[in-house]
Image 1: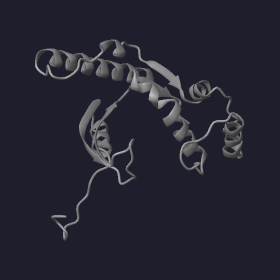
Image 2: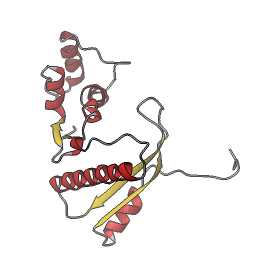
Image 3: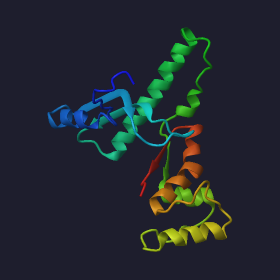
Image 4: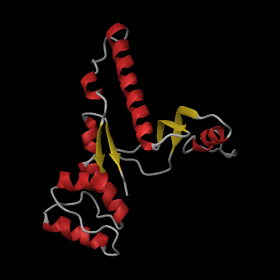
Length: 177
């Protein structure tokens, strides 16, 4: 390191400053910038990344989804225009993948459908061992070490069965428990 005697800090998100702006009367605000999370590194996670975070006062989920669809569709369209005129060495963007409205998948029913099983009642105290038993009976193996909590197991299953759906088109995964 170049500054061994100086305390340095890296932010994990622009959230605090953006929320202060909203409280101060700025109804819609966003920032695109660097962030850092001191977590593990693997093929799906880099501790240093660029993120877009935005807040919109007086907005419900349906409106946020619509705004996000417009943002992603507009970015894809504008990027394709740049590719066809200036960045000609880049492959074209298939704009048909950005047709609105984007597909919405409800978390638990989506997992059940993708995996071909019904989950036990997830609010029970025994939900984790019961779900692991259902997976075993169905012959479904959990990749890697078996998670020790229900939220971690559900996240792992979503990473395998739901998130890859977004590789082909934008999707919204809703009602994450």
